Structure formats: C-alpha cells, structure tokens
Amino acid sequence: MDATQLLDRMQLLAPEMVAIRRQIHANPELAFAEHQTSDLVAEKLAAWGYEVHRGLAGTGVVGTLREGTGTRRLGIRADMDALPIVENTGLAWASRRIGCMHACGHDGHTAMLLCAARYLSEHRGFDGTLNLIFQPAEENEGGARVMIEEGLFERFPCDAVFALHNGPGIPVGQMAIREGAAMASFDRVTITLTGVSAHGAMPHHGIDPMQCAASIVLGLQSLVSREVNAHKAAVITVGSLQSGEVYNIVPERAILKIGVRALDPAVRDQIERRLKAFVQAQAESYGLKCEIDYIQKYPVLVNHERETAFARQIAVDMFGEDKVVQRDPAMGSEDFAYMLQVVPGSYVVLGNGTGEDGGCMVHNPKYDFNDRALPLGASYWVSLAQRFLA
Ligand SMILES: [Zn+2]
Ligand SMILES: [Zn+2]
Picture 1: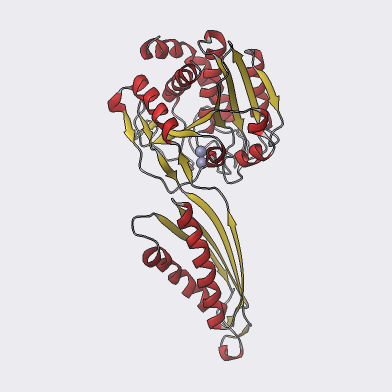
Picture 2: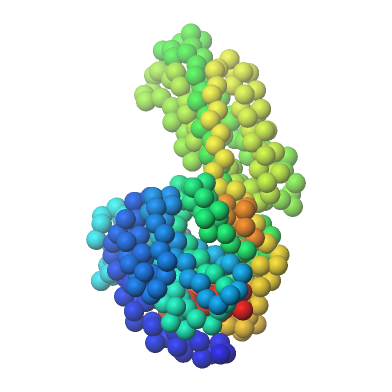
C-alpha cells in the first residue's frame, strides 16, 4: 500500500484518535502518577489483541503483538505524563485538574501510538514482534531510565527503538530529523556557600557569601565562552540565587541552583570538572565553606546512523522529500536518550503547526497538541513498523 492510501485509511480513524487525545488532555496526570492514562492505554491495547504488561516504572505499559515467524523485534515509545502548569487555553477539552496540564503534547503522542496500535492489529502486514512502550515521567523524572532499570529491554528485547515528539513552529505534514547528537544533556547543580553573618554596618566581622555568589554567577559563563571549544554547544544557566532577607545584615548563606546542558558527553564532563574546581576556588578565595551537589540528569540524545537513515526514508516516502527537513540540535533534553544508550534507534520531530495553528511552544499555558498531526504520526508509526518488520 502506498503512503496516500495509508493516510486515507488513517483519516477514517481520526475521529476516534481525536476523542482519545482530548480525553487524555482533559485528565492530565503528573510524572509517575499516570494511573488513569495507563488504565486507558492498557484497556485499549488489550481490546485490540495485544499482550499487555503493566507495572514497569509503576504506571508504564508495554503492549506486545506478534505476527508470523519473523525474529525481528521493534520498540516504539510514547510518553504519557503532563506538567505542573495551569492551563489557559479556554478549550472545551481543557484540563479538569487545576495546576496540571498536557503542555508538551504527550496526550497526542499517546493517542497516535494507540491509533497505530489499533491499525496494526487489524491490518497486520508485518512479520515479527512489535513492542509498544508507553512510559511515565518523561518530564524531569526519567521514567525511561526507571523502565530500563526494571528490565524493559531484558523482558522485551528490541533490535531498534523509535520515538517522536511534536514540534510547534514546524508546519503540519513536515518532519525534522537529525543524525547524531540531537538533544542536550541536562545536569542540576546546587551550590551552598556558607560564611559568617554580621551587622551590615560592620561587614568585617563576618564573611559574606553574597559577594562570592555574585562573582560565581558572572564567572561561570567564562567556562562556556573561554574553555569549551567554540564549535561545541553548551549552556550554563543560573536559575536561582537565594541569599539574605534584609538591608542591614550580611547573610550567612547563599544558595545557587544551576542548569548545565551540553551536546557532547566529553564537554558535559569537562564542564562538571571545571565548574566544581572553579566554584571551590572562588569559595576558598573568599574564605567560605562550599558544598556542591552535582547531579547528572538526562544524557545527550544521540540518534544512531542506520536507524536515523531508516526513519528518514519512512518519512520521505510518507510526507515527500521536501517535507523532511534537517533538524538543528536542540539544547532541550529528552529521557528517550536513556533508551538510545542501550538500543539503537532514532527520535524525530513531527510538525505541530505554525502561528495560530499549533505554533504555540510547549510548556506554555496556551499550548495544545494539533489534532491534524494525529493521523500523520500514526501513519508514520504504521509504515515504520511494517517496513522494519517486513
Ligand atoms: Zn516537555
Ligand atoms: Zn515532551
């Protein structure tokens, strides 16, 4: 079947897909608490004849479908969690839970993979094992890592694993793909500087952590501008500096919260090493005590060469050569990176639209997943599954 026929058939499933998407959207759930969403996914998969496995990372669901005698095994991942944001879209299907919102389009990712699941169970057209992975907690909490630690790929071995994310600002019907490092690593650093409090009129009786903190905020940027190779991307953002309360007291403590991102694991390690040394030396030079809590969160997302070429070919055949664009690396992070560390695969971006029609950026109270992208994403999954498991 050619791409047009598949897209036409998928359009017939669009009303159901939109209904599922809006149901999930109206009932968002935060990381590791996706109970209703997980139930919905499991019920649908079971009804369509999938073997359903629950409990990995708590709310994770894996649906397995076998066909023929083929030995190839494919994994496709969708994420299910929402964000702690107060929705402000005014839509009929807006969140019914104040302070929780599908502001990253994971409702759409889940709905389109479910729809592909239904289509593949009804029409088959593949030979091998299909593992559909619905993961919790993509946002910040690393649900993918937990699923892997709890045996995801031992219990459901995959020769390759694929995922997609919607991309506001990219027209519906386009896909953006990049081989190699596509999304940045993300680390969280908390620095606590402890000095000696004093009367503001007699600072010589104390040791002021505030001045050192200010110096660190400014000095840290030189790690990027003077020490990291100018061809390599890195971002250091001081997101919080808390110290003191009033005009006339030298505070005892200053706390900095810092996010570090890089597109190269070596640069990531370089910054960790140098940031620690720099901060320690600064604190020492001011006579302060210093504690550094440096937590490596998501790794760099690296798309594998062969699987990315395969994904690109599927996209070109589905959407047309001129609709598949080269993606710039992004400094955002994605926990699918953990899966790509253990199984080859590729993560692509599906256009969510521009301007009024799906152009609002993710993690914004006005964002909504573009329902017009649902049949396109589902068709991409069907085509990818049928050809990977040909
Ligand atoms: Zn997000
Ligand atoms: Zn997301």
